[in-house]
Image (cartoon, rainbow, N blue to C red; front, side):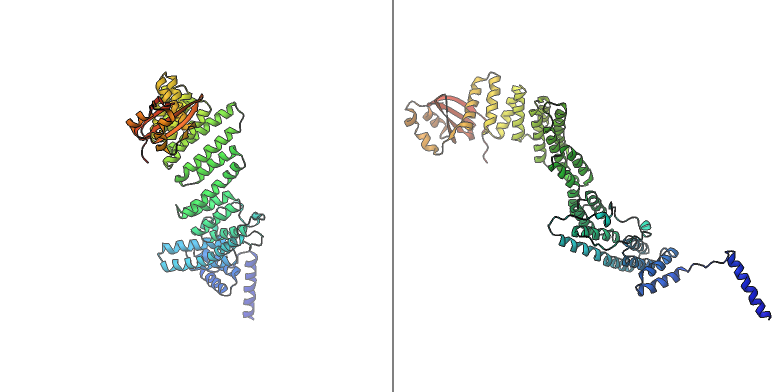
Length: 494
């Protein structure tokens, strides 16, 4: 009886404690959680395995084995963000403990999970082919704004389940697979290369840029990622430009240049901006202040290329040529000449620069300056008919009639004359053509045979011009008598 009484009393006491809320169950130890998690992993009951392994992780934050199993359990449930975070935390701990064997095992397991998603992305991409697709609403699968894997300590609590793709677009399916792969292994450069490429194909330019930048954080300077990034940042701007929306494209080209870390291609962006600015100016009302300002901006955009170290000399030369032409066409000669002075100093051997500079100075009525520039242009190519034309006009304005006439005959011969093909026979027939008193044979005796002969008529009179290019001389005959003699820089042998 006494024993029975004691038992009843004890029961009453326990019930009272429970009623007061003072008796609670104690949490299982980390080791018990880990053991339970391993058992459930063996049984492939991944939801319960993840529950107990998460318990073990919280109890022992540096238990690499628990984290490794947790990563696999999460991946089996398609919880790829938390799976990738668990792998990353485990790898960091193993690295801190200097355990290369554990690191190797973890990387092998992560690669196995990543490979399933990566290969699925490649397969879907190959199935997309070259045909244009109309992707379904990608917000149902792809992140509304791709930003890559979060910080591991944050990501490990993200148990979002990513559903299998059931949409119709293979391109979108590929992007979805690569996106998930990037969560599992944020160090895979190949994943970012493909993700950036496919995102561009889907028209998700900003996401493509972010994917490429993520990859470049892992491997700076990777050529494929740089190309993908460049394609992404340019696609929107090019579409606007091709659609004739030049003002909008300027903004996007600038944005593209800011987004691209490769300074070697900065001049290409700058040229695009300048060209779009020029196109925009051309569509504005003639004579309007807006058009003038737009042309001025276009010229300055081209001129900016001169100061860009990554630009080649040919790119700089062409850009400065364009800047001079824009100002000259707007009859803003002071600015055109200022541009020419810079360009001429930078490119003393550019015939195009010195040609446009000489012609611009002539239009600005700076005749001595035009003569100097045009003579330099003729040093680079004495056969240029247009430069001889402007030189004769400039010489005429300065009162140098003799040299002006000589330049005129050269210009006429080169621009309107007929070149003689059987040169020796033509020269030797001078007596028959012009009579014995012709002066052609006198020049032949003094200078030998010319290198080229052109004939032309003016006011029913026949002229022929003999060119001694290597000597820098020309002689023009009017019906067999010397009419004018020109001098120019000897032509350099090619």
